Image (spheres, rainbow, N blue to C red):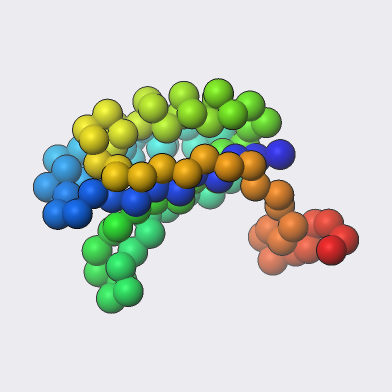
Length: 100
């Protein structure tokens, strides 16, 4: 069962995103085989990132934690909070996968 990682950025952290954004995107590219989905959460205006969502294809929580710990944004101290939890794929890619 995959893991969902949901992060919230620290307030006033645009400079951290800007400074480490290229390394973060490279890290995701290098690990795209592990990602079911990933992307920034945006504020209500849709203009500014305020966190991230990663859906990691692993059954191992330690692997999900290690993935996040190696992310340049984590190393730069971008996040004020992080939630890591198992995620049941009930609907995915426009299809229902399990009986509800």
